[in-house]
Amino acid sequence: MENKTFKSYSSLIVFIFFLSVFIYLINSQEVNNSEDFIFWASLNFWLFCSPIILYFKGSERSVSYFPFIGLLGLSLLVSFGIPPFVIDAQSYQLNPLTIESLKISFWAYLVLFVTFYLFRKVFIKIKPYEPIKTFEIKKVRNLNIIFLLIYLLSISFISTILQLGDFTLFIYLGLNLFFISKKINLSFIEKATFGSVLVYEITRRIISGLAAPFLVLTLFVVIVDYVIYKQIRKKIILLFLSFNIVIYMLFSVVKFQYRIETWGNNINLSIGQRLYILKELVLSKGNIELLRNNEKKTDGDNFFWRFSYQASALAFVLKETPGNIPYWNGESYKLFSKLIPRFLWPGKPQEILGQEFGHRYGILGASDTNTSMNTPILVESYMNFGQVGMYLMMILFGVLYAYLDRKFNTGTNFHVNKIIGIALLFPLLIHESNFTMVFGNIPLNLVALQIIINMGYKNKVSRH
Image (cartoon, rainbow, N blue to C red):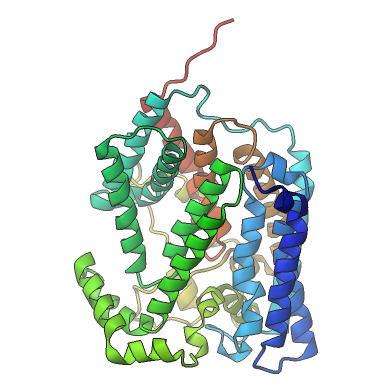
């Protein structure tokens, strides 16, 4: 169990940590922002810190397996709360950060959080999702093989189940971490396969040219570890921070050149070729000197610049809509087609909102049919319905998060169910994509999961 001192004062310790970060950010600003700008930036910072502080303070911690809404807050903190203090407002990606956009992000997510906490009490009697009713280790291991096979199929042959492959990957990784924690005697093949999958995923995410995929993988491991051991283990946190800091330091110096050489026309390069390019760039004399001398980087090299995309997209859309570009009036919410698997509907339209968004707002050139611009959930709600509609959508999201938290993040005694719940909810922690991209896979994953469990794990029926 957790250290008693930390458990007793956990919310205070977390608050002091965030207070220290905030004081550092305030005192380390290199750009003279207005008092109004700092005021609203500060409100955003503390708003997104609040859910994780409340998690360690209140009863939510004893009921929920992991801080679902707290981690959403931390994700938004990285996107909205910290960047205004470390990035020049004029250097944001799509548009300079404005006070208006800071106000909108604050009020919109305040509405979501308040709604979440209100409806979490309303949904207190909801029956938790427990696909595994009786725990049998042999059946769980067989089930894990099915998850592994679906993942391997998704990365090898069947692109139409790629999202299901990501879902089953997380369950597979989580179950293996559970086996290890319980000292279950795995065969050599099981150990070798798990190690190979882990190495492959780490490599694949590092050579993607983006920081987020590797960060997401390691964060998932931290969450599962927390749920299994019911405590925050220092060595896991240190490993998480160490790996991500090392990857960031090595990659930040070469990322733009690496993307030039591996994206676009070179997208089909093999893993070996990408690793070779990355190695040559990292080990080149000029880049080693940059890393060694820790020379000042531009805003584009700042770790938080990449994650500030959501705030810049919001500022951009607020400027353009409805003055230059009319409201979309719900056009982007194509949930019906998302719910039908492609193998049942071969002619199903592609999810191309990233293209439509980029072209309609003039971000992409007319001939660019490959680049996809993310349309964050908050941005999508405003560009469809304006401010009033946006706040109504945030109420809806708050209700949805409260329901999902009660359904998939409470109630079961089996770690298998907990890991499945984490895998289902984990994609909802990142709001950088549009609604159907973030939420649309949950129904499909649930249907697929039930089929998999019926195939590989038939629960015993109790007779009285």
